[in-house]
Length: 251
Image (cartoon, rainbow, N blue to C red):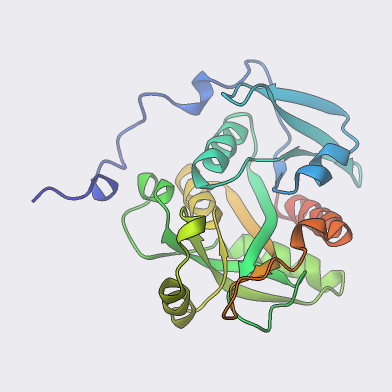
């Protein structure tokens, strides 16, 4: 029986379409970038320059901002592993060498209250994108340098956090009670849609990456709870600033 397509061993073969073929020519981005999944935060950043990537969603902005006399790129990378991986690939093709992703995640354990910061130290690969970048496997470990940059930044700001494994899934409406229980038994504290894919892309392309999540809605109880996580404006803006500081530290 042939292996599943996701398990085919052709990782050494170049892609027919490489990122440098589709990014804007003669554009160079800063080495540090933040992939921020909070659209209202990205819309409010004071950009000193904006570059637009081509996308089926229309021209997609990448802003350059200044922090402490240095520039870094900021993008809202869509939602889900495939689209965020595409945008990370294009940022890398334009010169990014260190990136911090920051977004929300569902709590799988009751002790993670709304807004609690989570530094991703590994991710369970329940999505398809990462298998095109790394050999098939269940868990991918995060970049130690990225973890150190994030934890150092959070410690310096006196922000409480946990380091934990994320369960990355494509099936947001198929997070069954049984799957939640099995993921918690494997050490997952949160569920998201991008972490394992972004880790895989970064490792494949040889760049530094860290991932900061904040506990949003909850799957820890008998019933799903929204907990108002999408309206936690101050927390989302503060985590963006911490991610920006960590990206500059990592670059």
